[in-house]
Length: 131
Image 1 (cartoon, rainbow, N blue to C red):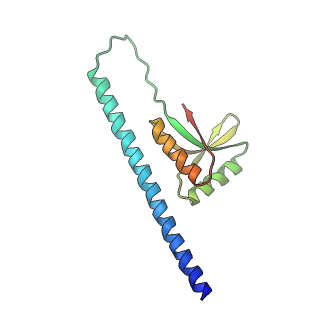
Image 2: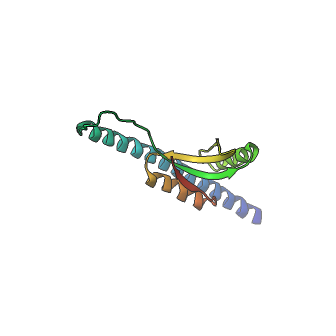
């Protein structure tokens, strides 16, 4: 009897996990669409504005959500694996003789903050850089 209740609760928990993962995916898709739309709007606005500069250097800046910094790649890769198991996109990049685990790159700070909040709710510390 008790085992049946435990199994039922585990099943409900798995269903809730799937719902949460689905919502995370939808949020990621929506934030990506928002970034794309705002980029298009910005480009459109820039195209209609006349500038009188003789030369312009363009560089794309972005916000990165960093979920960890590690001295060696093995530990960074372990964190990437852990985050991926929790359905977060993540990858490791070399940085200042070490490695950083990047959990998202965004054109808008508000979207990076959304991802940082999601990581915090899942129990992971993170910070945002502007590059």
